[in-house]
Each structure stands twice: as C-alpha cells, then as structure tokens.
Image 1: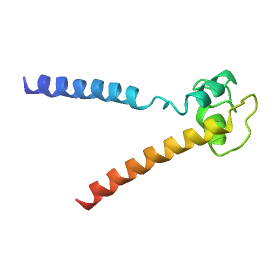
Image 2: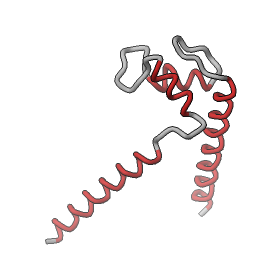
Image 3: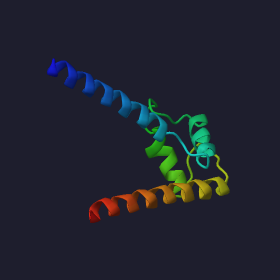
Length: 101
C-alpha cells in the first residue's frame, strides 16, 4: 500500500509542476509585442535551423540587434527589457535570502 501512496504522490507532484511551469513560462504583457513579431517572422520552438525563438530572435532583439523579418518598436524592447530585469532582480533577492538562511 505504501508503494501506491508514494507513486500517487509522485504523479501528483509531477502534474502540479507542469501546471506551474505553464503559468510561469508565458510572456509578460510588456514582451508580447516582441513575441508576436518573432512568431510572425517565422521563429518558433519547432523552427528550422537559424529560426529558434529565443536564440535567434527574442534574445538578439532584447540586446538591440536587428533580426531578419522582425520589426519591433524600440519602446516595446525597452519595456520588455525592464520587465525582464525586474523579474531577474526579484529572483536574485529570493536566492540571496535562501542563501543567508
């Protein structure tokens, strides 16, 4: 009986992890224009070589580089970059708090 309880607990935790990942992984409101522009330009998860969403489109755009077939307003880039930096700073603070305990 204990084996079944452990297995059921593992399955429940795995399912919960997937639902948390789905809600956290989406683009922020500030980054949606860039996401849409990258997708419209043909960049995505299952794209051909040289058309990977993050590596070939989103990351270069956030660094201020030009990306083929992607036109994004500089204000949208600045807003997205600011939102990503804020999120990373918050995560860093949480890590520091964990480290000090």
